[in-house]
Image (cartoon, rainbow, N blue to C red; front, side):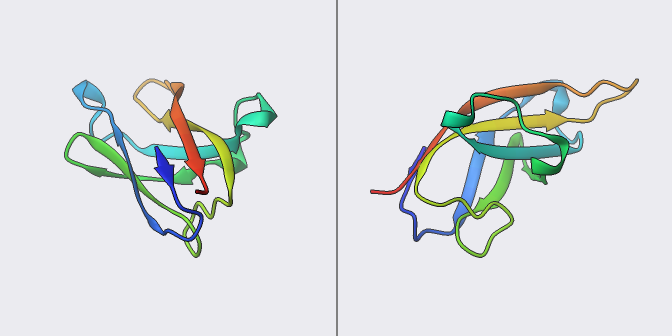
Length: 94
């Protein structure tokens, strides 16, 4: 996904399957970090049908600035399951 640094918009992450409705969180870490997000780097996300959505950009809960990011999703499931996946990349800038 590519967005201008001045844009505030929903980032849509296709998910689907039997995970729809589970509590979902999203983190965007600069790609140069090369690591998984810490617990406090995740933000609550919402569901829109079978997609996970979260507002990104200036003034949002994920206020990313110009650069390249890895997008991470974490779900909280039954029986203490908490899967984490790197689901894509985000380029913010021109």
